[in-house]
Image (cartoon, rainbow, N blue to C red):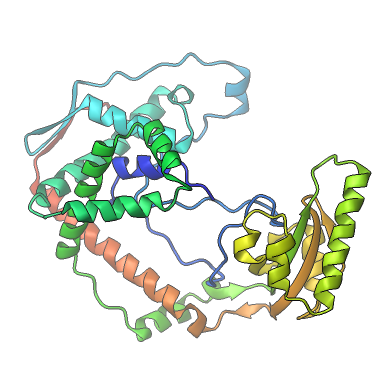
Length: 376
């Protein structure tokens, strides 16, 4: 999956100390990488954030109501004061908040014209609080040393998420970033992270802690019946002529015959499958519940026995040759399978709590003045 320019917007817009909490997934099992659009999933998997920092979202609720669509509204921009806040005597200028606001909307694919005056005010106030925290943590972390090599390493990690240098540079430009600005933001982020790590004391999580969480939250670890399968896809475009449909079906039948005769299914998928990414994954879809896939694919996969290759199945994506490699009955995921996930979740929760405690102390000892209209 090609990363979007939000990868770069994120580095310039917000910092890891502001991340929201998240709970382990209910099934608590390791899922494969998000499947491409041509996979038999019933709905596309959401794109995950490319880096740890991501812009804070602005509440867009109510902007797409039928009434609003039927009656065009006149856009009313909110006027901001030249200085929107003072933090320990340091100004936060309107331009800084506006840049953050614009970057957040851009990363969300939203437009300011779609926001009512109150939604704009609420958004500005929300983002201003993040800028205030950023100022406080930046001031506290100013003594942290970050080398050019440290920054280079972080930029190298970001670049790996792009197919090539040219795409990275294009997205950097579209995100309103420059190499110099990106380096400055990354250096600042690393300094903040290191200072926060030195201040936020995170307790160790033992196996007993993880087991207690597991036993206290049984519903979080229930899973439906699941199947593990791989597939070879021969894509058929919507509205393709019958000749093409039949040709693809014949190719799928030939692939199924080769698999039935003992050829390695993963190798066949890498060779034959037209699904994007199949050359890397070998068509492996991992474990999935029945409702995750389109009905035709799910019915066929759940009806097959472990180790069997079925006859080609037609879905909206084309013809699939399916091999079922494992099955799991509905029930509770065993603790050993989720112990590491639970431990990581509890560590992250403890870290967030400790960081919020540090931020609270900074805020309580700081002199902060804000000059925006009140949020709704």
